[in-house]
Length: 194
Image 1: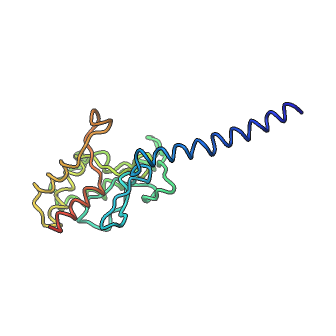
Image 2: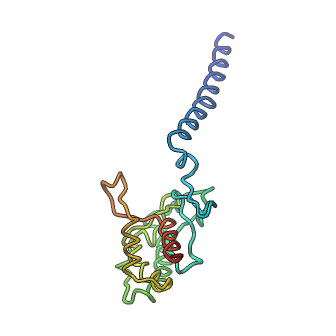
Image 3: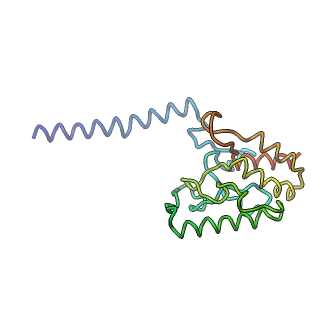
């Protein structure tokens, strides 16, 4: 009986400490030290939220915008997952071929002579979460031709906006340069409003 009472007390104490006190303390600390990140790194325009810096969005309905990487979750942040297909599966090969065909169909009219071998991997592969907010700088540079023509901007200006917003992961120390698609599209909108 003594062991049962000790176990019950341990469950109650640990539940209160780790299930209530610790999460509340971490939430409070994060709200004080970094409120923007604690609240989802929301991006606002005109006082209204338009997205998050951390979650990719579907821009496929707007050809004058930069496009995010493919997503098996249809950009649903409530249920993110990886496609879980292995390198030897036909389904993965079919998915990559379909993504490549879609990319080439969208970009070739604006980037004459674009070959499959020139398409960056992130343009046809999904991220682990399915909602990665960044694309590689190489991918953005290809898309810049389409965006510049459709928005009636100079390619040089679009490339400048890409360069201004591109960064490297790991505190800028390693990895390929990438750019946040939402922030880049918002910068283009601001450019058009001038």
